[in-house]
Length: 288
Image (cartoon, rainbow, N blue to C red; front, side, top):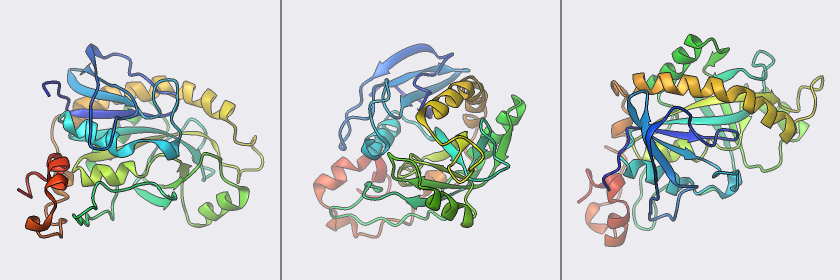
């Protein structure tokens, strides 16, 4: 494949295209895990080659549970992407995180059920470290560029990833608050896990659209409220990304690019040939 990109951008609810890209082409990518959510839009953004993917497909056709996340991350990796910026809509679990605030989380709690969260299996076992699920360098870039554009930013915090598609009960929302969590959403996993397995930097720009239902003085969470606040945040998010990709492309001082170096447990000669073939993009530098 001749089309390449350095930075991947996964657009969440309300962000289905990236303004300001030039020399744009749509790329259909085939993967061992089926097709991604949509065609990848590749082009130049602030002088950097980027690949944009609408997470839910254009027109928001795919629910969080049904997202082809393995295909999405594999497709970005196949284009040469090294760092992935995710934009996600979240509900706030803290009073100080107000609707329209932006959060750069540093931790995750997995409350999903039944989502495939690894590229591996079928004859290969891989145990990658995941204590810190977000790239600290890329997260700092998003935070500093957000501050530069005047957004109200929060650096750090725990993102609870729920299954959906329904929103939380009030009891669940208060439970997550008792855990010290900051925001709640439906798409941070398995994206973060799969990016770690693909040796890609991953950071999330989490857009708080509402207070989750624990906040009884606010209106009940609804799609109308979420979409309205998302649209208000789109321009800010896009400006942050336009600035962030320039810094993100300059260096990669983190260890994300070698996260599989000591993680493949299976004896290479015992890995099935078909698995080696399908996963060559991910394991080729470690397994022949």
